[in-house]
Amino acid sequence: MSVFVSAGLLVAPTAQAVESTTAETTVDGRTVAPRPSTAELAFELRKLAALSHGKIRVDKIGRSNEGRPVWAARVGHGRTRIQYVTQQHGDEPLGTPAALEFLRKVGIGHSPWARKLRSKVTVDIVVRANPDGHERDWRYNHDPNATPEYGEKGKGYDINRYHDPAVAPKDNPATEAGLIQRRNASFKPDIMVDYHMQGRYRDASGKEITASTLWPTNPGVKPSDVDFAKQIAVVVQRSIDDNGGYVSQYPGGDYQGIARNGYGLRGSGSVLIELSLIPEREQQQIQDALASMLAIARSAADGSVRKVDPAKADAIPPRGPALPGLVSGRDGSNRPYHSRAISGR
Image (cartoon, rainbow, N blue to C red; front, side, top):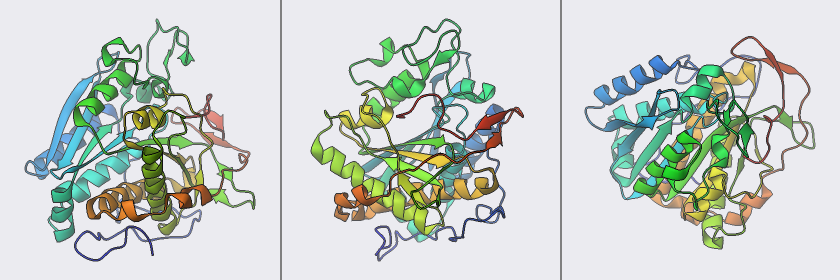
């Protein structure tokens, strides 16, 4: 039985599972903007907060190096705390519209399952952690004075290498990573999930992978926290696979500054989700990310995530070789299908 199918009020209507085809699908019958502008994102968050009549709380948690707001939204008032982070890498956008759809479903809905979910969990979302990178359609933040260990000199820092728990937010050279650290430290989530994007890959049999996931691999993370993250990863796999996708393990590294590892070291069940860059499947990729967000929240709310065998995560198939080809970027440039610049997430 799927871990997120349970009796009672926490079973939400899920997106219809569809086969992966060249035909584009929609999210709940609507075509969702995959790359909302900075202004559109602010408008949507404020609109959701207004429509929710106080159930969604929206805050500016700080500003980017160029002064753009970094937003967070919170919904629910339950004991179990979940944090989602989207778009640390500016050119990996699809987690952001999925987060807006999650807020819409959970924060505005009046159904019994939505009310019950809000009573059981509190979900905090850093929505588009890297607005400057989004504006430039690149991986890094923007810092012309950067001389980073991880990033590019004169361009910016790779935000997802600067979550080392030993570095205080005020000392963090990657401004936006420091904002995430500060929000995380004040919220103290039980579950932390970081949404990224990757290139196109297949498994050993040639089947295309639509998403990848991984738990902390740093040796300093407590085994119990690794096991909890593996339980979450299995929930992720089942939710996306049941929605018509195909999930693999991500071949990540063990550096403590990667969010997946850094927040695992802080004691959260910390998981990475990588959505594959498949232009003809873009709306479905948003739908799959939404399915994972809902499944994580529901399974945390009803406790079923803790009943998952963590060993099942090790059976998630490995990610295979990259598929050849090019994809058009937002600026019209062509890019190879591969993981961007630095592996490990």
